[in-house]
Image (cartoon, rainbow, N blue to C red; front, side):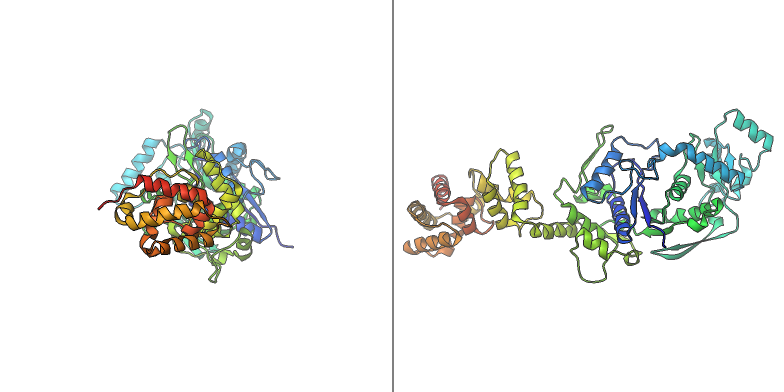
Amino acid sequence: MSKEVRVRFAPSPTGPLHIGGVRTALYNYLFARKMGGKFLLRIEDTDQIRFVPGAEEYIKESLEWLNISPDESPWNPGDSAPYRQSERKQDYMKYALDLLEAGHAYYAFDTSDELEAMRERLTAARVVQPQYNSITRTQMKNSLTLPEDEVKARLASGEPYVIRVKIPRKEEVRLNDMIRGWVMVHSSTLDDKVLMKSDGMPTYHLANIVDDHLMGITHVIRGEEWLPSAPLHVLLYKFFGWEDTMPEFAHLPLLLKPDGNGKLSKRDGDKLGFPVFPLNWENKETGETAAGFREQGYLPAAFLNFLAFLGWNPGDDREIFSLEELIDAFSIERIGKSGTKFDIAKAKWFNEQYIRTMSNAELADFLIADAKAEGVEVSKEKAEAIVQLTKERVTFPSDFWSQNKFILQKLEDFDQAIASKKWNQDAVKVLTAYAIALDNFDGTFDASSAKSLLEATAETQGIKLGKVMQAVRLSVTGSGVGPDLMEVFAILGTEDVANRIRFALATLEIID
């Protein structure tokens, strides 16, 4: 019987969740569901200095908005609790001491000044990447160079220390990545990373290995930025004797700026006018704010569909997938190795497609809510008629209000550029007669009858309708462009259309 697939998303609560992190969560979720496994969320809060209040709740709300909530988390614990690394603090030292006892780690007592002096010394010797490694550790202040009794004395006195991993000097480290294939690194290129910090908290390298082992994680799907750390993690599994249960690794390609030059950042989003976070973010301590996809009007299903294609493809021409269809089609083998350009135009396209598949009743609720926020009441029936009229023209649900508020509010002004060109005696004649015809209309007033009545009125006046059509639109909508005008007339009704025309006739002047 095969082992249950268990994956984890392990963000740090140091600020808002970047879109790249959301994609990592999505791929973990899709893989877990595809394989009939479990998706875990672990909060990696060992860096207490960078901890930001509210960030953990932001992560939770983001995943809930996208409907990819984890099976196990700090808010929905399972057998692997606790799910915050800060709550597992007492466990990590035990494992660090196990490595010390086995000769795979050591105490280091170097001060920050001594470490800086070491780096300056190596830089002066033209070492490209100064490191605390298998060579330099022999010249530093640690339990490998100090007498055993002195080490014990320093520890007993409470002198600050860190615990570093002891990287072998000459060893080839191999990793078979599910996306990139075999990755081979020589240990001489690795440094002796800190495993336990002087504050008693573990670093990411120790904590994530221990936690993944204790939580039974079978696959680690994470960003490409962690690929350089993967050889160290492979070594740690070996040092602990956990090679048989080491998870498979998959390192996801970077999300790139729209021009492809470099990793996508908040600065890029600010500069180019699009969000890089799922939800609005406000840091209450610094006052920093950032826009979110949710608040800008992206539908969660459309946003997920867009995210899935940032690095993965189904192998055919399909682009629109429900979450269930994504689960069915997903495979890590179809994730590319190269970075993916972020295309906000494509995100908008996905949103448009999803809006068009929604029912008028669902879309009407957006319009009703936006209208109410502006102090305007609109019936469900009228709202449904309006969204049906414009659902092929909008990108965001808020567009239903912004593009159609002229239907729901009293007309107060007109596009003067259109008026100066199109408002003339012919327009006034046709519109004056049409208002009277509307007053006397008896029957079903729909788009067809509105058009027939207008055509008949223009013909009676001896004026070609095409010559005055833009003026007719201007008189009723205030603009020279917009949705199907006769459909607008049908929604407004004969009385409202006639009143708007008379207001235009009384307001607009013919400019010779």
